[in-house]
Length: 479
Picture 1 (cartoon, rainbow, N blue to C red):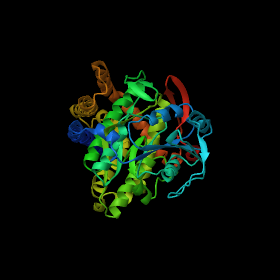
Picture 2: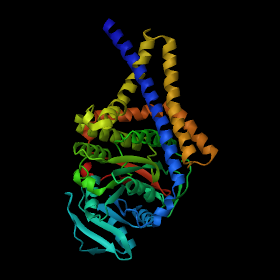
Picture 3: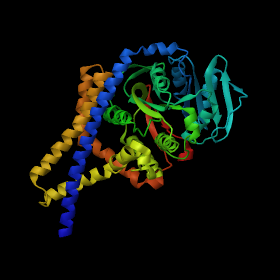
Picture 4: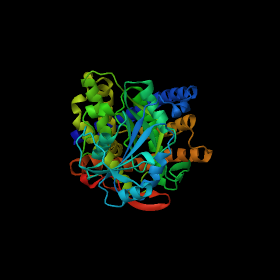
């Protein structure tokens, strides 16, 4: 009994210290992000970046779009990509063995014809069945291939691409008109750059016309609003601060740009995994460090990609479970890098951070919800300490979310009305009263079902342009 009592109180004290420490760490991150984003905004104001849109000095870029069963949205998304404000780019749509009419709709809409185009097999992929083009759309290419999954489709797109930089985006993503300009500026200004990530924002509830976001609105779905707060916190605070420390480990698969040669040299995207976006970044870090080459990987807070967030708890569970499995898979694959000074801030800061806070954090926080009340009920924890813990944890959590919202308003101000801002502030508070705990359970489930689900993407029901439909997020090769 004595051992049990000591364990309960010891673990409770550990959870209290851990919770306070992680929230303080996150708030320090917010401070770093604030300085970084203000510096970026100052730079953009001083730079006439729009002149790059017609500059012949800008690096041409290939946009690779893996597509699987996207018949309901793919045509509008291609039209949106064709209207981007950039001088020289190509759009490579990779039809990854779709079972619906994705390929047929593209061919019909753009009057594409099958052509004999040689393919440089720099990366091994599933068989390419055909390449389709139309001289009226010289920068549009449709690649039809056997199903191999998103990573395999990206590798096929890399093989087809002709430009030194490629951007990977999801088939349901919408890019702002000037996003490519802002993204490729990093490659021009810093030739050692091998990867750049843009911020991903939630488009639920907003008005989209002809593939362009016309007006941002707060969605009606409460689940989607919670995710707006989460995304602002994750991108504007988490990734911006790690980028400032040259320690970023993930560039969202929804929108990122890469030096093609660097990706090919490290073997391309790893297939048959569900966290290919994080895995490729960690592998790029490892390869460049092993080869002792100078390089730069960064995150930019303004090149914006709009995406749709889940609006049901079922879909949210699928997404968060998948994210945690992808994280676990990558961390296990590169465990030899942790606390290895050879890998600099990646080995000494980023990987330990992701192990301690992102992977194990949900388990520790969940156990804290159990053991700390038990310690109080058994008289092992003073009431004052118990209340102080709850207040500090709650206030620090709210401060982080509210700070991210204020940072968005100070810098980019996408939510222009005071009503929308106050709405988000309210959800930043109530997020800590149930929603956060629910997502923790989903993430823990991902850890415990790692072996069973490590190759399974599942499906998410999306609501797009006032139409509800179910769309598979990945090819069945991973199911």
